[in-house]
Amino acid sequence: MTEYANPSAELRARVALEKHRFHNTHSLGQNFLLSESLLEHLLDEAALAPEDCVLEIGPGAGLMTALMARRCKRVLAVELDNSLAPVLNDVLAGIDNVRIHYGDILKTDVVALAREAFGGGAYRVVANLPYYITADILLKLTTLSEPPESIAIMVQREAAERIMSAQGSKQWCALAAELQYYGQPRVLAEVPAEAFDPPPHVTSCFIRIDRHATPIVAPKDEQLYRRLIHAAFAMRRKTLANNLKAAFGLDQQQAKDVLAAAGVDERVRGEALSLEELCRVADAIFEIVR
Ligand code: SAM
Image 1 (cartoon, protein in one colour):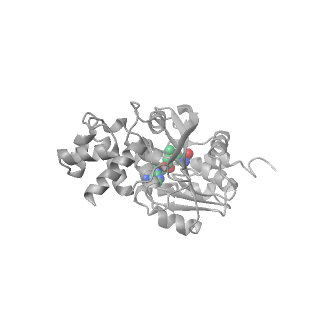
Image 2 (spheres, protein in one colour):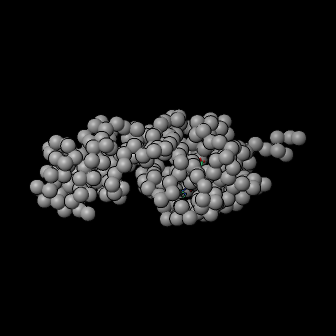
Image 3 (spheres, rainbow, N blue to C red):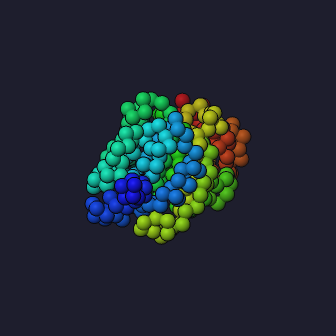
């Protein structure tokens, strides 16, 4: 049999893009990964198992989708651009454990869709997405009522550094705190711009965040805790006490009392606190506002 009679997934994707004269849309962040060997390496790092159900976001030409379908039980892919449909139909023809849903992931009811596709079981997320929605999508996924077990996602190197940052460092931010509350992030691979078609202007990192098996802190009110995380980093030049007054409508004395009850210095800045300390502050606010 010739290579063309049984083409590799990479060749199928390249031929389909050519055949349907697909033009990448810059505003949708369509920088595709079309190297099967690179994608196989990334998927090895993502540690997907045969019993896994995977939600892929932004399948593009569907090459990674096809490779994941070989490794996993089921793949549900959400793609915004339905002009990719003819390409995806060609690339995924004959693969019966993949379903494509066309829509904007940020407007999609992910829990309902995942339940429908995976029967309510656990699922993982894998995504190579435009970098301008990295933070929105990560915050959406990690705060779902039924969140994924892990999220493997391509991000800009600078974003990876922020997400991995430690409490008290310059990079430590609300996004890092939120994501580290959800799980343990790690960098799986650095991916150079030339690996993408077309190449972006930045270096990328493929990261994975594994959801904590048991929460590392247990706030009395999770929503309030999240509000506090965002308030703590809202105005970096202000003390946490001042940010608390603005965010929770506390007066000076209440803000002081909260910090005293939490055992933190009343002059502390929010970004100096660990997840554990932020949790104690949130619990102290909870006692006042409930
Ligand atoms: N995963 C493919 C790959 O690695 O070649 C494509 C990656 S490309 C960087 C990003 C993909 O996400 C594009 O196919 C784009 O159309 C899609 N996309 C962009 N915004 C989206 C959104 N809000 N919801 C779902 N898909 C989106």
